[in-house]
Image (cartoon, rainbow, N blue to C red):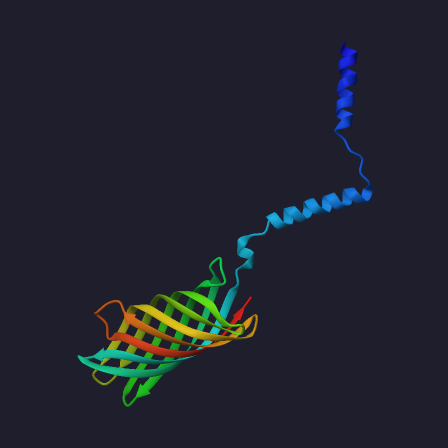
Length: 202
């Protein structure tokens, strides 16, 4: 009886195996490897990092000794951003420096750091738009004969712009931004700026 059971088990086990040629075996292994690679793809692999440089002109509304005035300055921006799981959404950090400007006996300087979130989409095959908002911190220094101001001001930021793509990895655009002080105890009130920017994507 035991011998009969052993013979049945061996016959059953033999029936589970299938002979394949060498070529078939290689093809099956290749298909399994392709499936493993395809399943291992990370969603973050499709995210692009973008770096940019811009030339900025700003009209800054300030209040000095109770008097409102508009101050104009030119500067530059450097930025670094990343897609947020989609080419249409991105986050960007930007540093702006307007250096020093002179008007009569007045000397002023302005620096700014922004953290922004934006939505981007295409208008045509070679152009697109961007809209976004964020927060920033602006350091304004004004020095004159009877004035000495050094204000660090938190600001809210709104911006929009148009980009033209020279290649898949390079765009040239124009952007307009509005910055508003989030506190009252500062001479730095509002600012409206325009920027020409160059961005790379990798």
